[in-house]
Length: 346
Image 1 (cartoon, rainbow, N blue to C red):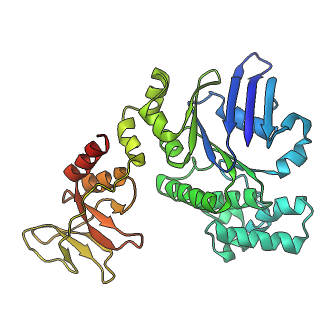
Image 2 (cartoon, helix red, strand yellow):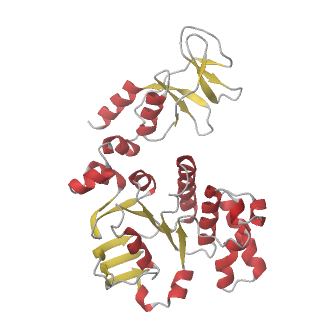
Image 3 (tube, rainbow, N blue to C red):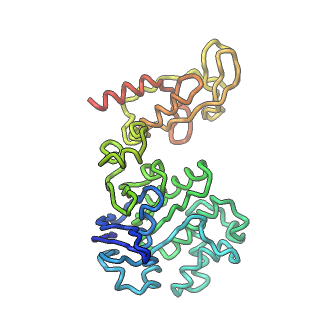
């Protein structure tokens, strides 16, 4: 658990970066700090590992006041991931990941073995361990950064806008990877971002900061979207927060209908799902027989937002529903999804 008790940070020029912060990050959860530039979210994060010391107040990790702990010892127990990964350019990927275990006194063979294990865990092939950071893509570098932060198995992981420098597709993949890792490792994670979509997607609780370093609201994502504390929070989470909130609505009431399925393009006067031999959708066949790219796919059992997006993005107006293996289950229409949403609200 991480606690901020009345924490304030005032810099020498008089700027107040964080103002009277009281906040508890529960153990084994992902908490996201979000807000506009200059609101104190990164400063708050850095006070956890003493890269910044508070002017007043107390920061505790597992009940221990961090100001009483030697900074190097403190940081060995806290993983830290930053934007652009911050890898050592002159060391191989494997040696980058092995850095912290070596500093902690591990033998070289054990440290490199641990590094190889972690590369696999974050979804990177073993042969990338021989390369240097400049030979990797941005997404691969960020995965290495996460692996390095996990190398000494720290209970706490700090992540300062780690995915902001990669494109949206890679970013979503990295978010998925983080959620998968957290399900396995159960770390206490503090994640900083300026992106409210990222915050509500990965956070179990979200702390919204306003300018002047003041905590505006601290709540689970669903509560934040449904009941913003004030006009600032409502404006920051966006006018489309109602759509975002569908990510937390169960889609069990959405009726899935059978789809017309073909294995090759044939004009039939109706929309048909084009599927491969394993039953995985590959697009649509229009009424006149033209092959048309499909919209997003909705994995059955997911939140209602995915079902609605699949229906709205489909050229046919029918959202394609798949199972966990990506095989076609059926189709949904937007009005069916909206009816299910209405029913869920009583």
